[in-house]
Image 1 (cartoon, protein in one colour):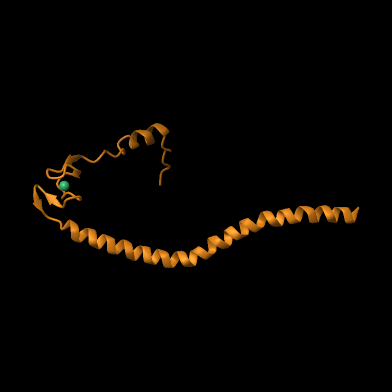
Image 2 (cartoon, protein in one colour):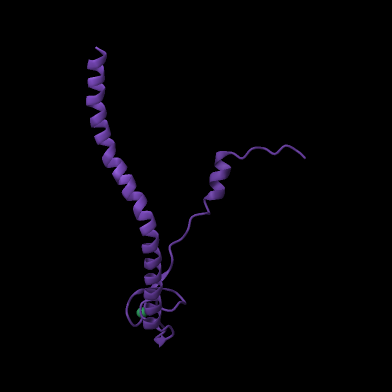
Length: 114
Ligand SMILES: [Zn+2]
């Protein structure tokens, strides 16, 4: 295989000049005025062109359930993790004491040593 010429910075940059992302085109919901993606149902009121498509209340309930589950799992996890940070805090709290103790001890030791 032939040796490929290395890409110049200009070549790389000119290639990437087309990589920029464009902002999503938002339009206002007809019913609630919230910004909505075009050709999508409104997420806040669940309507598409004035017609109810999504049961928002049901979705909210499901979301709450999911979040509760997550919280429960997170709480269970936090109990496990909660000990670790506390231990770390204790370590942090004890560390200065150790240092304070270490200081006088070292001084005493220095005095003992002469
Ligand atoms: Zn809406």
